[in-house]
Length: 453
Image (tube, rainbow, N blue to C red; front, top):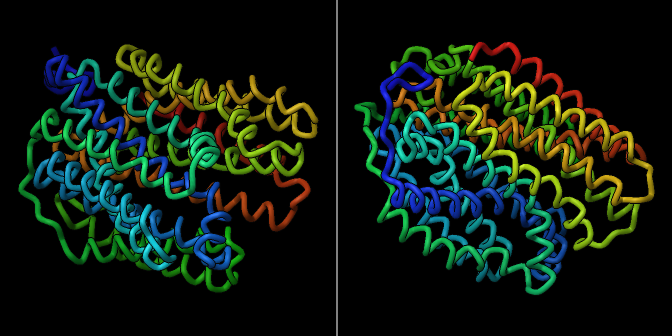
C-alpha cells in the first residue's frame, strides 16, 4: 500500500508502544508550548517578588523565546543526522532540569539564564516532535498522528492563560515551573522505553550556517519584539534590517548545499511553502485574538483573571474536539481543501467576535470563540500533515523544525502587532486586532485553496 505522498507505506509502531510513545510526545510538547507564554500572566508578580522593574522582567519571556527560535533549525538538522530520539530525549531532560532551576531561581539574572537553558531544551522537543510522529504512526494514519499533535499544541497555546490562572489561584509563580519536574521525569522514562530509532543521514552541521541562523532569527525576533515593546524605532528597524542582511547571506549559503540547514529545498515545493505561509498567518491571527481579548475582559468588562481564563476556554476546548477528526479526514480527503475550509470558519468566528465587541455581556462571546477554535483546529491537522508529508522521510527533521519556527514567528508577529495597536489606538485596539486577525485568516484561506493536494 502506498501513502498519500506516493511513497511506500511505513508500518509505524505496534499499538501499545504507539500510544505510550505519543503520550511522551504529548506531555513534553504541552510543557514546552505552555512555558512559552504561561509566565505572561505572572510577570507583574514575578517582577515584584524579584524586586525588578516591569521592563526588565520581559527578559523572562524573551530569553526563552530567543533560545527556542535560534535553536530549532540546527537541532532539527542534527536530528536528521543522529536520529530524532537522540535530540528529543536530551532536550526533554534539559528542559526538566532547567524548569527546576527556574523554580528555585533567587534573582532575575539566574532566572533569565535558566529560562534560556529551558528554551534550548524546549527546542530539542519542538524541533523533532512531528518528525517522530512520522515513525510512530503508519503512513496511512499520518494525518491522525499529526492531528493528535495539533490538539496538544493548539490547546496548550490557546489554553495557557487558563492554566496560568488556575495555578496562580492556589500557588506561587514558582509552581508554573516546578510542576514540569514530575511530568518531565515521567515523559523521559516513557521516551527512553518507547520512542523509535529513525533513519540517519550522512550530512554534517555547517558551523557558518548555524551562526547565520542564530543571527538571522535572533535579530528578527528581537526586532519584532522591539516594535511591540515600544523600543526606539531606529533600534528596532536596525535589528530588522540586520536580520534581513544576515538572512540573505544565510539563504545564499543554503542554496549551494545538498541538505541545507534552512530547508530551502523544501521551500521550493509549492505545497510546503504555501502550507508554511498559512501556518504563520493562522498563528499570528490566533495570537492577536488571544492577547487582545484578556485585556478586553479584564479592563473593559472588569472580569477577574480566573473569569477571563474561563471565558477564553471555549477556544482550546473546541480545538481539542475537532483536531483529531480533521486529522483523520486528512488521511482520506484533500488536506488543502480541508485546511482552507477550517480557516474560513475561523475567519467567520473572528468576525463574529469583532462585531460583538462593545457588548457588556462577555458570555455572548463564548460561542463565537468556540467557532474560532473549531476553525483553528480543523485547519491545523490537515495543514501540518501537508508540511510533514510533503517532505522526504530523511528531511522530516528540517520540515518539523521549520513548522515550529513558523509557529513562533507567527505568534511573535501577532503579539507585536497587538502592542502597536495598544500604543497607537488604545481605545479601539481590541477591534483593530480582531479585524486584522480576520483578514489574516481569510488571506490564509486563499493561500490554502491554491494547494493541489
